Length: 89
Image 1 (cartoon, one colour):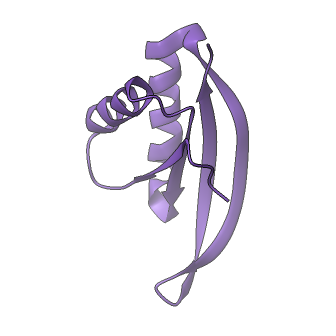
Image 2 (tube, one colour):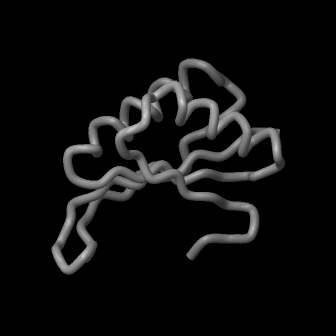
């Protein structure tokens, strides 16, 4: 369950740099944690996004959890990865 100060970014067809901007804006707006979620063949792109965020923001973020599983999406079971990061204060 998401808290009031938590957001989800579902990784899709946009470029990694667009998602990086989204993450930076969310943290700038005061969001305390973000879940980076990728389904199916976007799982690797979600991991790439985490690595890019980690590289750019270095010590200002921390990895909270990584969940791997499957859930129904549009009537079909889809594999996913959910990477939860938070901002250090």
